[in-house]
Amino acid sequence: MLPSLFPSAYSQPMSVKVDLDTLADTLGDFSFAYLVTVGDDYRAHTVAVDPVLTDGVLQIDSVGNSTRRNSSAHPQVTLVWPPREAGGYSLIVDGAASVAGDGLAVRPTGAVLHRPAVAGTPTASGCGDDCVPLNG
Image: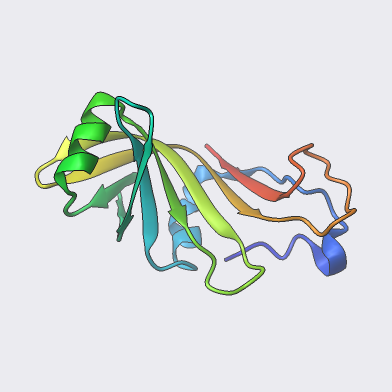
């Protein structure tokens, strides 16, 4: 369900709003994600996870001590699904995390499909890259 909004050389606007309700469909185009948390020293801690969207919440089955500690102290987290192919979109989801059993529950607050723009291509959003926000 990745957008075909950008024909040759991304000649269309670089930012198109899409409802967060489409997140479930969008996730079908990706496999694993990276979960990014920060500690009290504001250093990023990144781990590979397999989130599952259930009732609008991303459920992560199991996380380690550092991830649990970081997300408890700083609940604003980011999940990044890398593109399946070179030049493809990454899916970036920001959210609020809470401990749920051995894992985390992340309530999405915003999402964007992102990839570098073709050099010299103007961007309507001013982002500088090829961004497709998923808003809800």
